[in-house]
Image: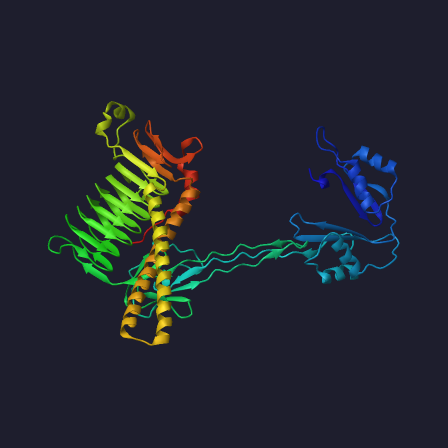
Length: 553
């Protein structure tokens, strides 16, 4: 219990008053030694028997103890717990001797180790206006000012569609394919601030939290302006966002892809208004399909978006995939997979998150693997059998659904290979630069000749390739870093199923297996000390909701 609740000493009009509340049985009581110590500190002369009488009486009211007969000022100084503020209460003597001065008060403050933030004007006002028996704030530290996060201003979007200034922007949720012209400013990046450090009145430094820099980089056909404040387009085309970079790409619009068009391979964005037929393939930086896709192959280093469904399709997607539904598909996605309606007998492997968004959506059969998080409304086909039916039905007739979260060994191996390749490219670049420097030094001495110039040109081309290779590998590795960081914070990943979960569903978290033994609903499966545990989705969903995202149309 705080000391102020056990007793209170008040000095007013030259009288010392003591209040001790009535003591409850079993409760903490005022300590006589502490009372005497405080009276001594205040310079109070008293009759011990009078103090004992008040202590025993415990009326709960202020009782007169003695007259205060000092000839010097008493300065009561209190510090806040965080040492951010100091208050002074001045008690004048009964018979005033030497006057109170600013130097006297400051010296008393320094004796209490109060060194910074002393307000001399306030102290002078207290002395001049004789503000006594009233605690007044006379010293104050400086609070920290947190640094502001950096943010982008997306100038390529119409002004009404831009995110509000200063807000966090997830590039994968930004509508793109906006037409831009060569030289047009695409993005202005507001840099993060470091913040301002603070201090306590006792001189302790309080460090501020710096803001986080927003990371968006120029990609193909874009560059920084000379001042480094804006990313601008170096060619006309349409905007494409991929991971943390912005590029400007050419776009190829195709009505449909079938036997009449053959395979489509394009170094830019492919936009298909209709369907993609069986035995066709599409390779591009980004792929947008307005219809459905049959037993075809889709391959993109960036995003793939399919307005309708995949049926027997093989997909390789470097960034994120958004599709309405899929059946008998085999899908590999670098980051996020977003399905609107359902997934049937398909194998999906994605680096970070996988979700089916429709409240009535479902997955049935196949293997669904994500590096971090899976969120599903239901498992099993609509109109699922009752528990009794499931028990009577042979297990071989019902497709088993396997859900798995956790960084796969394949992804870990890929991460290590990217790091290795990046280092090799950097070492090769260093060798190239040494050779270029050597040739330049030699040519300064003996003069220029065509053979040396040709060698320099070859070395320059090789060095450029090594730079681009290292840069590309490092960017991919940074994406893996983000996935790995989220995996650590989720302790291996979480599977959320908000609706029905039939018996026989297999859940794998951190390579630990959990078999659902009976029909259930609304479960989040995560890893704990004793293996996989199941609990309601609501609480865990609040914690990880921010890591799921929506890809705009």
